[in-house]
Image 1 (cartoon, rainbow, N blue to C red):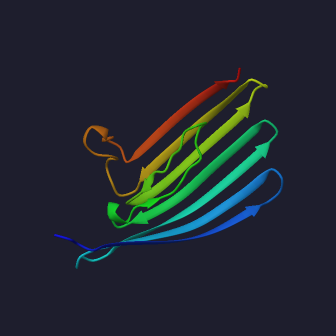
Image 2: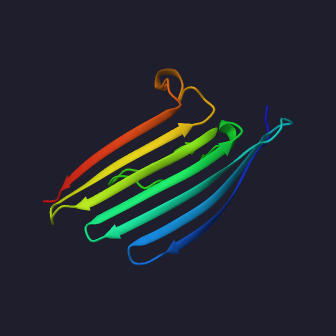
Image 3: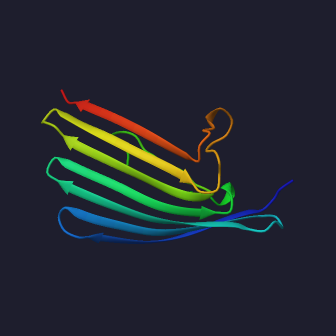
Length: 150
């Protein structure tokens, strides 16, 4: 049986370079999902990014609030990550998402990254499902990467 599914989205963004060291990026995202004659599912996310750059040090951070009816109306938002990695988590349910990425060039050959990220759900007792279920309403991830250039 063929069924019509409609998914639509809208986003607005605002970028501001405060000076040579600081920049801000603000976004509002909206998603809507409809399936047959069921009530549509929808959600939104408010995202604030800040970037700081000073010499060999670079710091990127995010604070996001999201509120969706269910997983069908989830919102994907790209996040900066360690070298050669990427992160595009699904914002679903009601909660907060934050991350902090620090990159430092120790010398001409050595540099490193540290990334801390956290998702906090406000109306769920657990995060995930099955073998990935965490018995807390939050999930915290830590990544550390060092690079040596030949």
